[in-house]
Image (cartoon, rainbow, N blue to C red; front, top):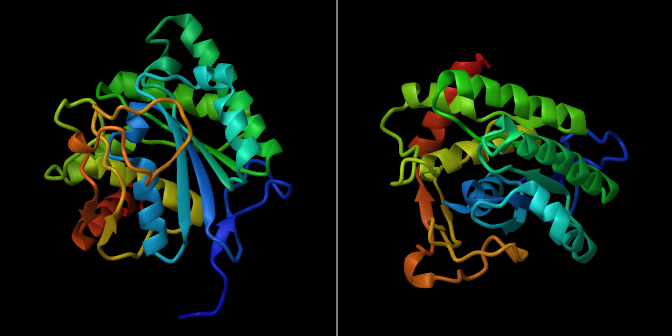
Length: 268
C-alpha cells in the first residue's frame, strides 16, 4: 500500500467552482441535501462505501425529507446549522424532481434557482465544494428541458452539474437487466443509486472507480423511511428498522457494467 495520504475535496479558496481533490490525512466529510430521490436506497451511504472501498475514505451526513425542496432547507436554516456544527468538504444538492421545470408552477422554478444559489454560496463560504446532482424524467423532450434548466441553475450558482436524466436513458438501453427503479417505478432502484454514486465519484475524483464488490453497511431506506429534515449521518440507525434493510451489497460485475456503459456513452 502506498504511503501517500488519501485525497480530499479541493479547497474552494483555490477555485470556488472546482471539485477536484487534494491530499489530506483524514476522511472526507460530505453533506447531502435533498429528498426521497436522495434517501431511497441511501445514496449518501452508497457514495461513502464506494469511495472508501476504492481508497478514498468518505463519511456522509444528510438532510433529507420526502417531497422536500431546497428552498425549504434555506428557509428552515437546517443547512446553515449543519455547517455551524461540522466541517464539510463537499455539499451535494439534489432538488425535488420537477421543480426546475416548473412542474409545481412558475414560482417553483424561481424558488429553486434562488435556493441553489443561496446554498452554493453558503457551501463556498464554509470552504466546501458544491455540486448539483440532477434528477430525471422519462419523456425525452421533458428530459432535455430538465437538463437544460438544471444546467443553467448550476451555472448561475457557479457550481458543477452532474447530469443524470439522459445518462439514465442511455444506461437503461445499455444494461436493461439492472434494477433502475424502485418497485413504484418512480424512485431510484439500487442500480440507479449506484449510477449516481459513480457519477459523483467521477466528478470528485476525476476517474471512474476501480473497486471490486463492496457492501454498504447502513440503512437502505425505502419510501417508508420515517426521515425528517433533521441532520443525520448516513449510517445512523433508521427510524423504522422493521421496514429498512440494514445493508446492501454490490457485485464487481455490476460496478464494471455501469462504468462500461458510461465509458461507452461518453467515449472515454
